[in-house]
Image 1 (cartoon, rainbow, N blue to C red):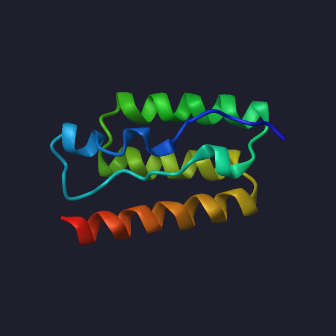
Image 2 (image 1 turned 180 degrees about the vertical axis):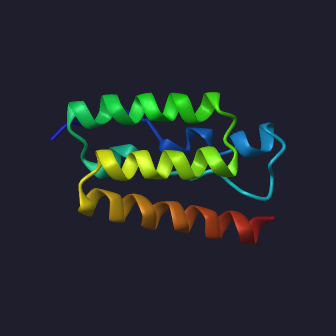
Amino acid sequence: MFATGAVFAGEHGDCTKQAGNTGKPACAVSLATLNLTSDQQTKMDKIMAEHHKAGCSEASEAKYTQEAKAILTPEQFAKFEAECKEHKDKAKTST
């Protein structure tokens, strides 16, 4: 198991607002809760950086999710998706 600090897939939680895309919130998932290996952590950090660079659009969000699916185990990805959905649902009710 690899412990991470306060690294969140959702550190970009407001990046869609910064990109002018306030209607489609970015996914906020705590990578620390996924029990990533060091290799997975490195890969997730890389795709997160690419996602930020792409501007957090709907297309980059979809690409990020697909890439995460390829990196994570099925159990990790299920948790990732569940947390992402929960975050998006909360964001819809708060707007």
